[in-house]
Length: 247
Image 1 (cartoon, rainbow, N blue to C red):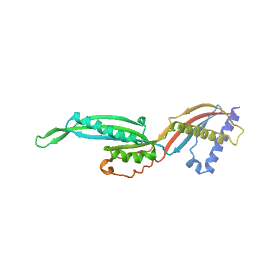
Image 2: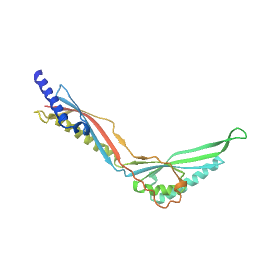
Image 3: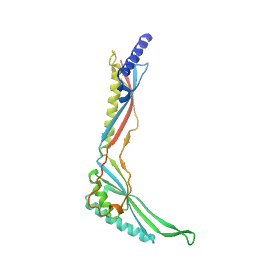
Image 4: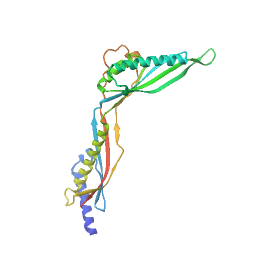
């Protein structure tokens, strides 16, 4: 019986070798990661990749101002922030789609050459927000922000509403890829896949486009045309390790 198993596994090895030798693109375009075990199981690593254009833009921006008095700095900041929020809501933005991410008040020191030391030069008050909008409206919203007191756009992140569904689709593709690899090995033999012994799903890798640009109101204030924004593609990659049983 051991001799029969040895002959079978040697035959499988030769079969796999001939596939690689006769198909130069086998190793360059498709990465096959499998292992045949002595207990009639095949361990395979399958991969799945989903690419979709984003439909959500998350805009991180700041309102920053300077004032000699800390109390006045915060009061003025509050007035500017409330005025901006009202403009945003007038565009049909839901209140749940914008949130404050940070509020800060910091002293400003400058070096005084006469006294040869740093002296207080007022206070800097900042409120940071994250705004969720569609990719199509992101350019319009940036123009609105910079025309209404926003000093800096920190970055724009692009996402999908159905990102969880894309994760599941990537896993399904990875499982199909693993089974196809196992079937390819057994294709010219009398053996066939009869079940699955175990499945391990690696952490899902996602690559979301991020536009890291510092856009200041000095360059964008007064711009009537919406800033063109392209979201690129979101990549969702899944890897699974599957141990198939064959008979």
